[in-house]
Image (cartoon, rainbow over all chains, first blue to last red):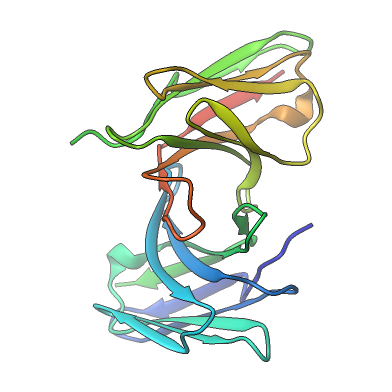
Length: 110
Length: 114
């Protein structure tokens, strides 16, 4: 069964705007990771946040984690057309393997 | 450095046939995982290998099998293909067998079963 569920399923914004995607999960985790996938290609790792962390930044990316609500969010600031892709959260726990959600399809319009 | 390479990139098979997909990890990476991604969905875990031993298996039928070779490359085999096996098959490698080690994905093999 799916562990992570991204929301929204699809998001369309204008270049320069911020994009926020959410991920909810059901069981306890060791860490949560976000990946990007351009159409027809493999996934690219973006950022990892551990269960004892609440916020993490990497360039234009900001990830938050709320373990009490079992949710995470990915914020992309000042979006660019090149950010158009599908974004997946993956939850990871001991004794288990990476479990990916269904993803959010982001379209950044020029 | 070369990334994760997968072959072939595209493959068309008919129902009942067998297929072998190949993956070469990033140099120095000892862990290889296989994922199935159906169109419009997230990747689903199939197998993980580390140091040539199976370390994890997803909820897939016995028609799916895999192995890892001494050079850490890997093969995924699928027997008795069904139409529902049509998907993008992704291979991912990581440096070590650790849940904190990010996955590095290849661009996948697009399998179409007719």
